[in-house]
Amino acid sequence: MMAGAASAMIPTILGATMASGGITYAEKDRGMAVIGAGFILPPLVSHAVLGEWTRGAIFSIAPALSEIGMVWLMAGRPDAVFRGNMLSRTTFGALLCADIFFSALGVADAALAGNQNPTGRWAVVIAPTVAANRIGITVGGPL
Image (cartoon, rainbow, N blue to C red; front, side, top):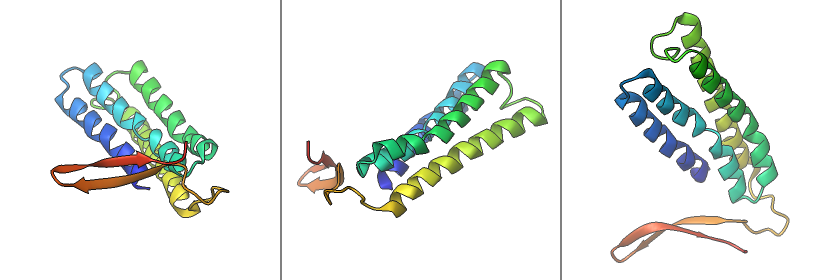
C-alpha cells in the first residue's frame, strides 16, 4: 500500500508545481496531466509488490481511461480547467475524481488481498534502510 501511495505522491507534487508555476494554459494543462497520470501507476505498483501484475493492470484501466478523458478535454479546450465554463470545469473535476477514486480502489484491493502468491513469498520486497550516515530504500526479492 505504501508503494502505491508513494507512486502517486511524486507525480502529484511535480504536477502541482508545474500547474502553479505555469504562465500559459498549455503549461498549466501539462501540470494537470501529470497529476492525473500519476494515479495510473499506484494500483499497478501495489499489486506488483505482491506479484499480481495482471490484477494490477486491470485495476489501472479505469484511471487510465479517466486520464485519457482529461487530456482529450484539455486538448480540445486549453482553457477548460482554469477559465472554462461550468460544464468544462465540472467535467474535468469529475474525471479527476474518478481517476483518484479508482486508483485508490486498486490500492485498497492490494492492501486487503494480502499476499496470495502461491509460493508464500513476496515477489518484491521494498524496505527502508537506515545505517550509519545513510538512509535509503532497499528493493529485493527472488529473481
